[in-house]
Length: 246
Ligand SMILES: C[S@@+](CC[C@H](N)C(=O)[O-])C[C@H]1O[C@@H](n2cnc3c(N)ncnc32)[C@H](O)[C@@H]1O
Image (tube, rainbow, N blue to C red):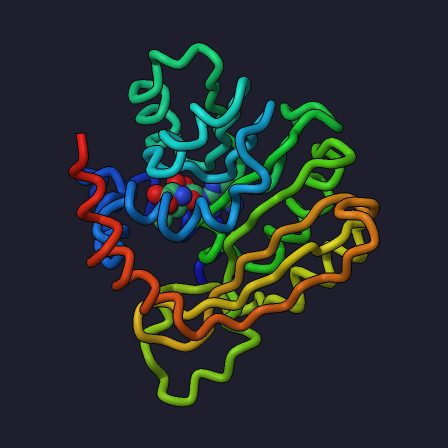
């Protein structure tokens, strides 16, 4: 069970951060190709914006793209090792701040102040208790038109018949659970996409949500994307070479 202690022990102490997390982008050919080929197409309606809150930036794999896309950036991570690394790496960006938290509290973020919340490749290791804590707070922290994009586990919602590697995904979380939490907390899911991960079925989920009135009368879009890793190969083979231009 990847509980908060597991996350703290692994990412604060045991993990070898020498490559800064870049190694996790290998199937896409690197984080630049992954950002512009896989993440940005899903976020382009939401960026650039005024204030961004990133939950769990690690060593800043996505932070380097988020900071130029806003006028005020805040990164919150439970690991002091990660917070120190980000403070050093982004010392030249005066509009970026980094705060260590306990893995559940967002007390230092003012209410109704955040236009975009982002978290990718981090909360997949967070069990449902973390979402019970974060989701209602995020809905308070968002502006009325603000949106959150969270990457989380769907392992509970996926019967993994072959017993394939589950990549330490949290077992107590499904896309439905997170959608229910958003609704119970007075929010609205705009789009939810279940995605495959590294040879396994849809063990992950991308949930984009905001306050109740967000996105007008449009209904929630539900997608099941069984080709997320095929997308990665296309990005690696045909987008990544463009990262060499100039
Ligand atoms: C696998 S790393 C990914 C970091 C970064 N998102 C990336 O993709 O490179 C996971 C990060 O999540 C952080 N983390 C895990 N659970 C957290 C929680 N509940 N709240 C804040 N940070 C958390 C860890 O400290 C670590 O920095």
